[in-house]
Amino acid sequence: MFEVLIKINCPHCQSSKVVKNGKKKNGAQNLLCHSCRKQFQATYQYKGADPATKQLMVRLLERNNGIRDIEALLGVSRKCILDNLCRQGSRLSIAPARRCYESVQIDEVWSYVGR
Image (cartoon, rainbow, N blue to C red; front, side, top):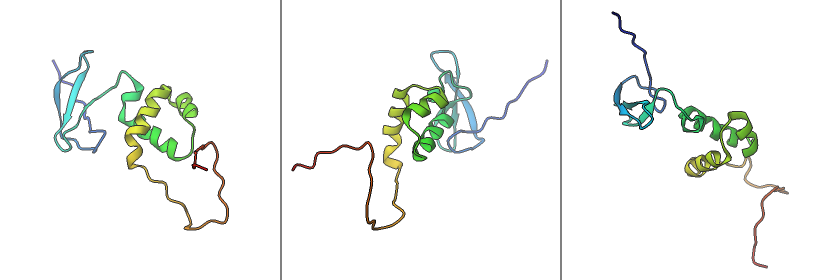
């Protein structure tokens, strides 16, 4: 009889202080990181739940990829991308390269000014 050990690092903080923490409803093993106290799974049943996929979604949105492009590339639903954007949106900041511009072009943005 032999035992197989697999080293798992936390996807949030990359710490190796990980212990088992029960099972999910679908029977998947749940893990807990002692450093950041977040729970995660070694493998995810749904692509949209994987933290690496969520991080990639944000990076693609920052690089000006459309939501439908991200949907096709990653194989996740538009709702999943939009939900992730709403959750992560407060942490994102896009700063202009210069303080003042002579002219600005804005595409696909509609607003009502009042007059």
